[in-house]
Amino acid sequence: MRIYLASPFFNEKECEVLSKAENILKERGFSLFSPREHETREGNVGSPAWSKETFSNDKAAIDWCEVVVMLYWGNYSDSGTAWECGYAYATHKPVVVVQLGESSNLMIHEGSHTNLYSLEELRDYDFDMMPREGYKGKMF
Image (tube, rainbow, N blue to C red; front, side):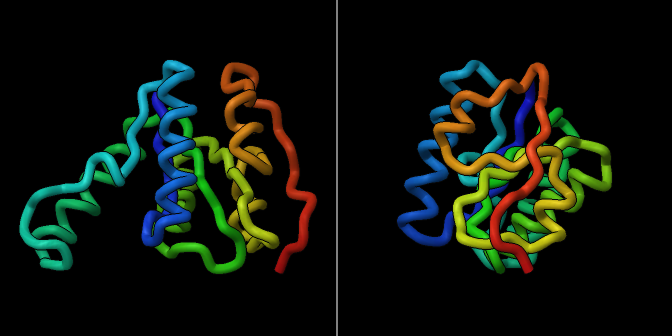
């Protein structure tokens, strides 16, 4: 199975959790695209060339994948990650949200295929049967 892993990676905690999720999915034998591991080298970070190349690469990877896994820190997590999941939803790709925060925006959990609540749940999730689980936490 081809998986796109959507997640912010702007601080040490986000990077640590993202690394764990990358390892879990790779150990399970999935073909994984994680934007952090596939950062473009086109132009300088923040340049127009870098921006266009990063967008094109990430969009192509979502088109390539069969499932998007989102690491979601709740509330306003990251606009890029939210866009990736919205695009996946619009192209009929299931989104598995790993809820890591204390609340969720309805557009995230209602647009997801299922909601998990830890990396342990990600480790055990049945990607063949793709069971659904609605969001049960605080929302806005």
